[in-house]
Length: 259
Image (cartoon, rainbow, N blue to C red; front, side, top):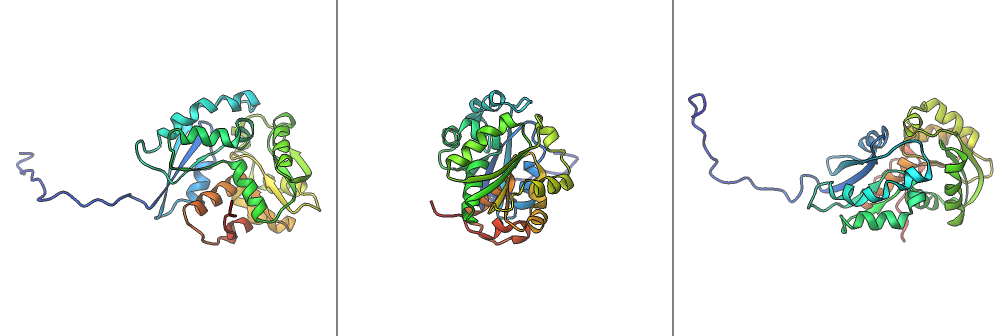
């Protein structure tokens, strides 16, 4: 008896759905990340697609050593996202670390915990996005130092892109990168776009560029891809969501290219 009211067990157990939501996307983000979750909440999460997040240790400043130090945490982090349940996609949300660690190495680390999941990195998603847009000559803007940006320039060049202009904003703390105002992002993007480039890539999952892609595209007259726009697009398409959302950027109106 509780407060004089008898407690009664239902006559049968409730029927259960296979999943609370049809599709599951797991995000592995940095402990210092301010931007990925809001961007994915705005662009990806829906009544059909659930977005589930875990964080891994990260220490500023942004250097190759600090970026590489995240690699040992990836498998455990993936395993903490809905343990013992399958995920459709897992996305590791750090562009510069994806260059330093390597797309394949990140995929292997994540699949060690979630073998059924398709793995997305910002770098691989950006490459697919730029190719979907038909871009061969690109301009690149990063918030990083020249030293941190150099491996990224090598990454894109090594995959066959011709880089017309590469602009570095010189920051070393990803929390400051997240505080670059959207007006400043637009202003620097205009300066970073070379006239002959087919598209502009804005690197870093901390930078709030995804919210102003359409504005930048209108200003430069060319397609623009940011880290978070590329990963959101890739995750949506891998979950079978082919809705065209050109108001978010030209990329969001395109299908994922076949391998």
